[in-house]
Amino acid sequence: MSELTALLITTFTVTSVLWLSRLKVGWIQKLLDWFPAILFSYVIPAAFTHAFNLNLSEVYLHTLSRNWVIPLAILTVMSSLSFHKLKQVGVKPIILFATGSFSIAVLAPVFVSAFIFVWPSSREIFIDQGYWRGLIPIVGSWIGGSTSQLVLKELVVCPESLFLSVIVLDNVLINSWTILMFQSIKRSDALNTFLKIAPQELQPAYKTSRSEGDPIHSTRLTSGLILVGTFIIISSTDNFLLRISLLSVAGLALGNVIPRWSHSFVLKAGGILIIIIMSILGLRLDFNNLSLPMAFVALCIVWIVGHYVVMLLMAKILNVHMAWVPIASMANVGGISTAPAVASAYHKDWMPHAILLAILSMVSSNLWGVFSIFLFNLFNL
Image 1 (cartoon, rainbow, N blue to C red):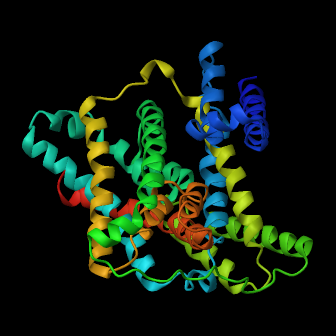
Image 2: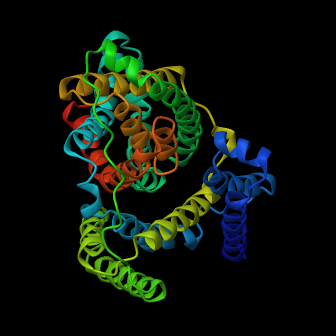
């Protein structure tokens, strides 16, 4: 009975979120600016289990999600990156973007070490109580979005109760940061003058590099290869980290080698798979444990500001237009929906570049998350 209940709640949640995300009602769109539709996929199942006192934390759907749906989502998302289009962005913006990703991955263990040095009592929070594990899903979220957040949650074994609190804080920080980046990009010319950066001409938007051919045929070919590739890799190993690596490489290869690969389809399919994964995860949540210590919140605020400062310094070193700083930051922190919106606030010609950087963010984030975990272990935290 519990299996059927879990399936019905998950189906209802996915359907509701997809419907909600497509509504064009004004007040709903304003609500979704602060509370994204995808977050409802996590909250709705939790509301059901909380309201009806259901224990759905051990149903088979969780095993199915970890072993099949998450791997399928990884390969799908990774195959959305086109190297041919990415090279048209330019070297300097990509270096600036990579610096932003690097700062997110590195500053987490650095600031934890600094907090412990300045306030020795914070060691109990971050290390003894294991709150550092909640920072790793944030690395995934800020660099790659929901897919990486979920993958790194599993990889670092972040407790469900901590993870719920983390995604609520993460949502508040990302929305606040989006507002700040909208304001920042409007002042790009003034920052160019202040930092003595020579203004550069806008690069034109990329042109379509190759046709996907017949849409139906391309979709069938793409979906078929994704399913076969995922099945082969899952069947070849039980190691979760190795699976992620193989799926990532396979996705990149398929998306750039197959002539009729449908990049538009895999982006849409990846979004739906993320909603399914989060809806299943929501079955395990417990609202009673929704809390975070102030030291954790303070570190996250210092962390995201530090990320921006590092990018400002790199932009000065590269002598690159300051508009790229908020664009590259939002490609990391905001993702494929907000990065082009921020870019359009300066010049609409930069929107396609912002989308490509956001896709690059999605496909590189798992690697950055693993690097951040390595640094935590290296620092003996």
